[in-house]
Amino acid sequence: MRSRRRLYRAAGFHLLAAAVALAFLAPGLWVLAASLRLPGTPPPRTIEWLSDPPAWSNYARVFALVPLGRYLANSLLVAAVAVPLTLVVASWAAFAMAQLPARARYALLALAVFLRMVPIPALWLTRFLVLSELRLIDSFAALLAPAWMGSSPFFVLIYYWSFRRMPPALVEAARLEGLGPVAIWARIAMPLARPATVAVGVLTFVQYWSDFISPLLYLKSEERYTLAVGLRVLQQLDVTNWPLLMAGVVIMALPVVVLFAFVQRAFWVGEKIGGVYGN
View 1 (cartoon, one colour):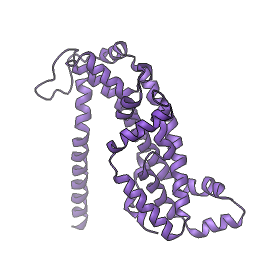
View 2 (cartoon, rainbow, N blue to C red; view 1 turned 45 degrees about the vertical axis):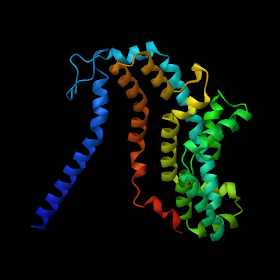
View 3 (tube, one colour; view 1 turned 180 degrees about the vertical axis):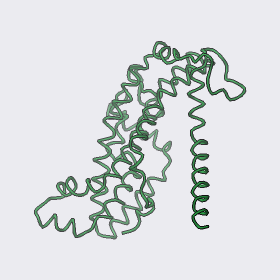
View 4 (cartoon, rainbow, N blue to C red; view 1 turned 45 degrees about the horizontal axis):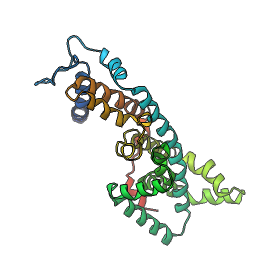
């Protein structure tokens, strides 16, 4: 009797999980189907999962209409520089915080939480003026400026949570062996914080890959546009050509989907991020 109940519960759980997964996958599948409709056709009034015949040529036509390859390369370049830079800066800040006395540590934690609550639009004008004074406008350096500060206080908190879970005796033993702070960070802290590194890396990639406002504010030259701005250019060329725009959306979303598919196991952590406030 108990085995039947367990079987029913397991079946119900898997059915519920499949229904939730389908609900999240349905919009993506609809975008993919819409990208295969014939160019110039209006959106269907009902759900159409596959056009007959599918217009695979839409993807080639997108690259012919706008220099999407250049925009794609620009986005990859920005993300390729921003991700490792963010990992280093955020992990350094978090490791330093984890070694401080309790009072200083909690003060910095409160400051990080406060900074996380500041709305991003409130920083646009100040950041633009600073970058203008530094003569960084219309350069990729303007897009990478936040990476020099860890990109987000949230990333520092993720690393802090991981480093605070390290046994203090392990760090003390490393110091007795003659290792300095940088060596302890590189040889002990970072290998133990591999799940946090993967999480911060993926979130950083998504942040810079999908960023639309920063390139729009700081870039003037069309050859430096990123893919997010390139999709806007594509839309302005033909506002009513939804299949081509959906093809561009699929091209932009594909790297993120592939990245999450490869690293999804790293997110299977049983603890909550709220544990950053613990010892």
